[in-house]
Image (cartoon, rainbow, N blue to C red; front, side, top):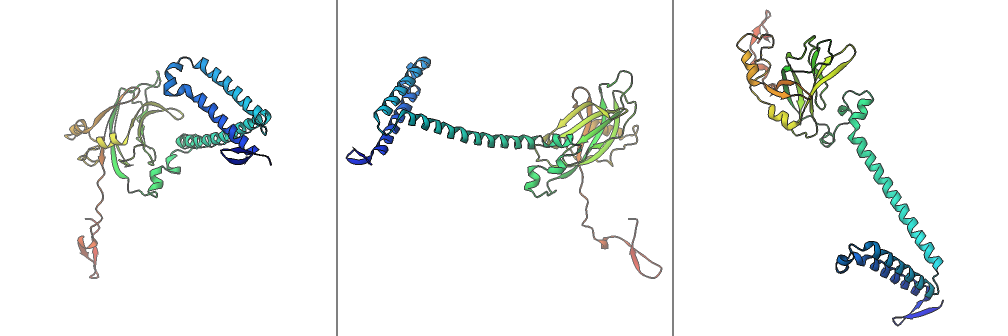
Length: 312
């Protein structure tokens, strides 16, 4: 194989020509980058549409002259090398874009999983798949605490029909809890006094779960949404106030002295698009299971044995 002397060393002609061609390509890249560097950026910033065509023409002439002077490299070889490089870049870019598209599709599917499952007829989709917090805690229920929601009344609810009053009821949806509803108050109209309570499992540190309160009217088939309100975990935690439970509130009576409790302890929330809702949250006291059987009084049987009393 013929050789050339470069820097005092004998190198094959093909290797030396490739090294020279690589230096030429490096010079071409440097010339393309010169208008973006600081010494030339100020004067070439507004003349890029004129500078870059001149640089590109000079680079093509330089590449053609190098291919003409190098004996083992032709213009045809340079052309097919550029085509091979572009083909490789396009193939790699296609694989990367397909991978990114698959990841984006998975992310969108995971984000919209609740709506997709609801469209398939699943009423509470979050109970099927779960969230990251559930997988991280191995589906432990220790992060939940029971709270009680008291619904007093609604006011200024818009009408769904002009010829008939609303048959109002309230629907509550929160995370893994099944949807709970109040009873339907027929021909209630624009305002209704519910005086009902319901207990829910609540995670005060869940920033994604939303408590959705929906005021609906019962139709002949299905129901129509009249107003709605969503509360996040911090808002529910702020509205949770101990001191009043379902035993202290007299649900049946509205004329005794306990009626003042309703006006004093309930919060007023503005519904969307219109209407007002009066509610409050209270923590549910935990049951005391530490009492042993020896603490209960006993009674004597006819045969002389003893047994625990049924009515404490």
